[in-house]
Image (cartoon, rainbow, N blue to C red; front, side):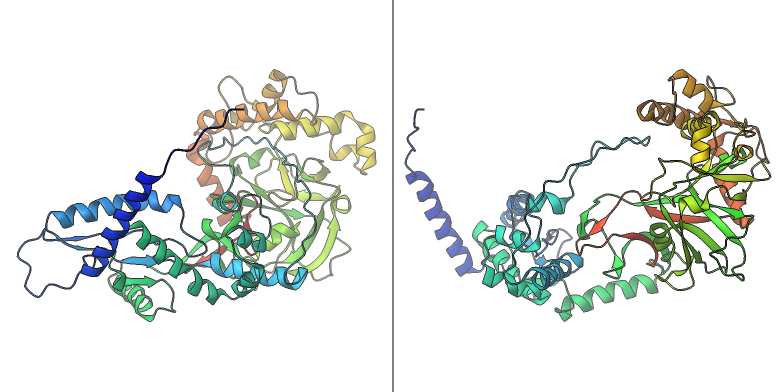
Amino acid sequence: MATVERKGTFKVEYLQKIEKHVQEMWAEQKIHETNAPEEARRSLDEKYFVTFPFPYMNGRLHLGHTFSLSKAEFAIRYYRLKGRNVLFPFGLHCTGMPIKACADKLKREIEQYGCPPKFPEAQEEQETVERDVVPKDKSKGKKSKAVAKTGSAKYQWQIMQSLGLSDGEISKFAESEHWLEYFPPFAIKDLTRFGVHVDWRRTFITTDANPFFDSFVRWQFNHLKARGKVMYGKRHTIFSPKDGQPCMDHDRSTGEGVGPQEYTLIKMKVEQELKKLPGDAGKVFLVAATLRPETMYGQTNCWLHPDIKYIAFRTSGAEVWICTRRAARNMSYQGLTSAEGKIEELAEFTGQELLGLPLSAPLSFNKVIYTLPMLSVKEDKGTGVVTSVPSDSPDDYAALLDLQKKAPFREKYGIRDDMVLPFEPIPIIEVPTLGKLSAVTACEKFKVASQNDRDKLVEAKELVYLKGFYDGILLVGEFAGKKVQDVKKCVKDQLIQAKQAEVYYEPEKTIMSRSGDVCVVALCDQ
């Protein structure tokens, strides 16, 4: 292989020498410093002010900062040459969870693995790909910013090593205050070397460690509140129980861009005594999270996974609800339990123990429906309890057909014939080209033979759900004859007013905070 001889660096070194000389001259003449004018302003355009988004102080500055900063730099230099009175202050961002979360992770790693830590050998993780009926936004990257920045480093200690820090230095970063002392001077040094026209007398960090900036922010919000421009209230947001505060994108190790998903929580009353519950338990409900409340007219049964664990817990309304522990944890931060983050657990069940229960379901034309087994119910999505509407859900139709056709399957889970065989899909929504039983039509179109035909069922669902929402006409109930998209909210509100449903939120996908906590959706003060 031919070697390429490197050319001389004389020109580069000569330009660097000029740059250094000019920067020293700027500093000596203090041309970056701007004092308040002694005379009154003579025109509206004699001043020019520039600010730059505060870079976060959990590491050194990088090329991206330089690229963005160049735009501010060009403007500052241009208007100074035009004779304007130019001011360019600079802030260094130190608030929020990233610094504290990183410091806490270092503390935990030191406690668990020693100092310096000896980490276990990394095992290669296999990524699982899951197809969903919800269209993906291809503009979003696969990795969060946190993951993209850390590369292959798994532990915080390794991330700090990638910044060129020694083991002796890294241990100091277990205290969050050290980050504020270490990185800001490097940022100022790098920016000065870059030649930015910043008045460094006006630099600051953004925490209450800087009382001047802290009082300035308080002053802004107090004035905005006094003028009615900001209000205090509650809203559903992604929340880290471990950190005790909302978890925004920059606070996450996974799940950037993922938000809260709203569901309608359908309350299906259990019409049979459960021996594990105390005699004074009161009304007991299986609660199912649905995105399609308008289809509740067509319920024929309720699905549970035989092997998933469910809990019964008491709600703030003195009712007993049954769902997965994960879902109950979300609910406990949304005002649905007596104390925030606390679950009064009464009993634990396997799905198998709850199969065959008679239920009364809101809006259903069937007076009684039963809990039946479905092996595709997920523990990490929804409540683990799924309403079944085989007329408009291909999954439900395929699973119901399997149970009706396969007597050994019913026998395996103790399901009597009368719990399954009499139930047929109920026409509730008419969809152009798909008719009054859209799920049945779609399953026949894609030749779905059983609930194990996952790829075919995904295609069937895409067709049914999209056409059903945009073109479907409701055939039953108070809103019969109206488009589904126009009455969806009306049906939901009607169920909530009748105390047959609640609003429930959970993250669209699993979100991990930088402190290693699985996030929930909480009803937070804002």
